[in-house]
Image (cartoon, rainbow, N blue to C red; front, side):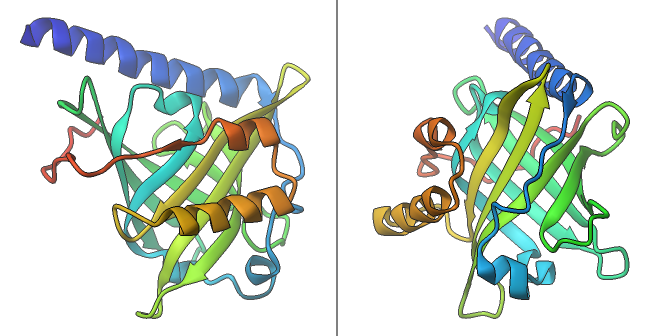
Length: 212
């Protein structure tokens, strides 16, 4: 049983990487600057995104079959880069999987626009990503964050990722609705919004993931 589970896991991980690679190689970026709230445009401070996060809602083809998604962010003030260690589980929350991404300012000069790439595979996979909105917490850090990734694949508009993150594993339905309302107000693709999936962290493990 364990062998079959690991085989399914290896196939799933290979599929995830293949999907991301296809998006990265066959795609061109589009203007994401319009998908930012005034708060992001005027006062974004990514040092406030440092630390541990839970992904609480997502629409992302590369996360099919994933559960218990978490992130640990490290911001480098000298470069403006944010490093994100992303961890999740596959196969009924049994097998851990993690990857490390870097969010690098895209060079446009617009606040909140990044080129996101998988560490060790920057040439293969670079995803244009925008910080859509942030919400301040009582501790001086952000407590909520919305990010959006879009690529144009083979000449067609294709949304790669829409992710809602929070400092706590659970957030209220009212809070999620407020985050959804922000996306709608900014005219983020309605089909992508409708595909958002809420993550249940109630049965998630806290041990380490296998780094690949």
